[in-house]
Image (cartoon, rainbow, N blue to C red; front, side):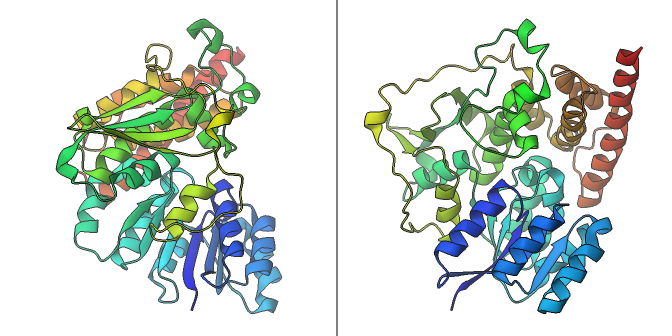
Length: 391
């Protein structure tokens, strides 16, 4: 019998690559639920190929198109964020790949944990926003989480068979993005088109901009703290432009283990779907002879101030990271529309941090309220900046 899977964010980069792997192993995997944000045409195409039991579109305005296309095929359809969260309690799948963008992954993941599902986590914001709550829920659930992010998958693989007490440091690698060698003054004039040209990875627009600001690395440090139960001071980032070493673990005896591979997300997705077992691949393997130099350098937090938001979020705790994430979602969207500058992304985030009330021990309702309040505040801030610049 195949392993039944729900793919949240099926039309995005991680989602489409997940379906590639499901296609490669039809005797092992079956897509039972497909869910997308707004790309209804792509979702319909995927549903026609994979014939899931249920297809969900988050954008309720696209529902009639989805229903008309798929109901004649006997495929159940639904729409909205609530439908996506409710689907996590279905008994016809056991694994969920959470590959949605941003905050939208939080509620479905929590519902999947409560339902005892196996989770292949590609939505880092779930642990960024509510890491303490999610890890507490996991302690009381049959769920397990295997990370899909290449960096966290690398750490997960390096820790297999190791005593957690012997871990001295987690070292998360970063490509440095497209502006690694640019000056602070040069990045002030960055356009969205320039920021979307990542030198190593093909990703969605939101995560590509997060890579350019290096906020994604701050988020990955926060995520690693919760995934691996490691003190924040034991996690650091290092810039590795070749993106061949995906991350490393240093142990108390001085040994350092690393996971290497070509920049291709199929590998960590395959590892997570295989439940930490290694499935064969026909893709081009890594040849170190093709990489005469693997270089590493300390990240420049003055040039990329978003990096400093990780220690701030972990030191302050509470709803701080939730504020950062929500403000960033708004700021990135505004930057892509030309409303604010590249440097304005950091400014909007820090402005929100100074205005949104701090909650030291937030509940799920507090996280939801914080997210909504921050979205509203940051949207007004971006509109104010845009109107000022237009004058």
